[in-house]
Length: 81
Image 1 (tube, one colour):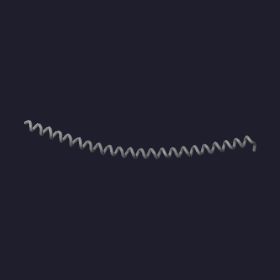
Image 2 (cartoon, helix red, strand yellow):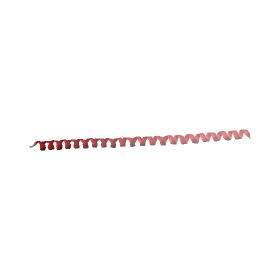
Image 3 (cartoon, rainbow, N blue to C red):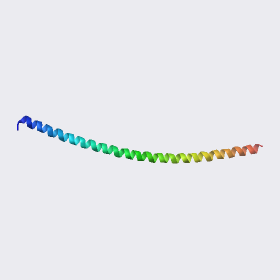
């Protein structure tokens, strides 16, 4: 084999190995991004459920506060009469 053909063969093998390694690394990176996306979605769903629960509690407390204020206003009004 001539020297130039050895160089071309070596470069071809090196380029092929680099391409295979690059594709492998990219696939691992893509898989990790997909996993991270699933984890973020689950965390987002948990936060949403917690926010809905807190909103429900706030609505109940607001209704209780408004009822107490109304009672106080009625009590003040009846004391003045």
